[in-house]
Image 1: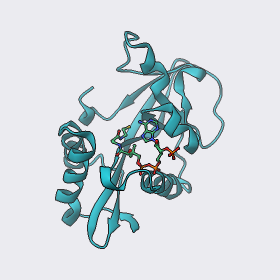
Image 2: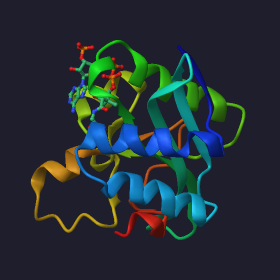
Image 3: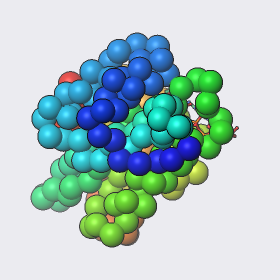
Length: 171
Ligand SMILES: CC(C)(COP(=O)(O)OP(=O)(O)OC[C@H]1O[C@@H](n2cnc3c(N)ncnc32)[C@H](O)[C@@H]1OP(=O)(O)O)[C@@H](O)C(=O)NCCC(=O)NCCS
């Protein structure tokens, strides 16, 4: 199994992985909108002898600081591995390859919406713990505040912020 940057020839395989793993087409539609908006900052695939068995997308995100100004970061997701190949470390390999890819760049933050039990292993913590909130979270679903997580490659000054994903997410 090889983790590599996706190319056009992979797009139908990526769609199949996303649709099977999520059991719906909403995530593959987001990925296709990100590509057509040139907001696919990094798209990786897990390639097993030419079969696409996993995928992850990274796209631009921004944090509006309560103190004024903005920070630019990257949203992680969607990430998916076909059910038959899950729990073999492929999701982790995709996420770690992305974090490694961006390590030389000055990315202020990474964000993800998902299970804290899974993303904590990659250094993500609930954004709410440092007063950062996802713009689409209206507070009506309490679990949402814990599910929206950030990872800061470098320490940042304290202060609240509102985070926006790229509009292709439709949120
Ligand atoms: C999430 C996903 C990408 C992980 O890929 P994977 O290759 O199975 O992940 P890994 O092998 O690196 O890690 C497996 C571990 O993650 C855990 N895990 C997977 N999904 C989880 C979830 N939603 N909540 C908590 N833990 C989860 C598994 O229980 C397993 O735990 P273990 O290592 O203690 O046994 C994959 O399960 C998937 O495609 N799920 C459906 C799509 C999805 O929900 N994507 C994430 C949306 S943000």
